[in-house]
Image 1 (cartoon, one colour):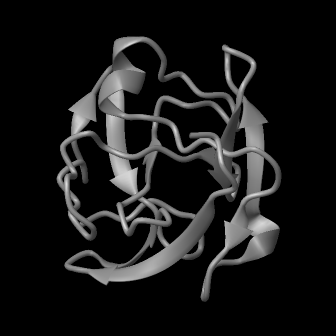
Image 2 (tube, rainbow, N blue to C red):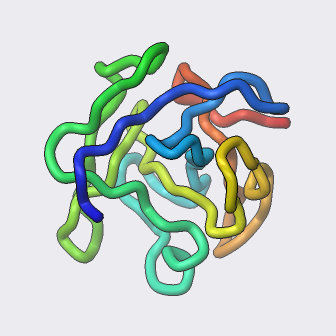
Length: 122
């Protein structure tokens, strides 16, 4: 659903990372250029974009000034942090899982996102 999304912090084996309102790890895609997503079609099936309607909400420890949205190729908004479009990974089935960390898929690598909005290298 395209509800208002809260981005939170969670402590994991990678350290403190950004997670969605259900505690699922949020990732950035190194193929994205600036705020423009390069993940669509089959890519977006495995790496669903974090959607939002309206301004996303910053949970404790998350900088609201770094949160925003960008328009995807389908015209719908995707949540960004520090200018990076945010994604979940379909194979993270439980809160706190980081199965997508460092994977190369759809032409580039995927990384969990730090509270500063940088990639985590585990």
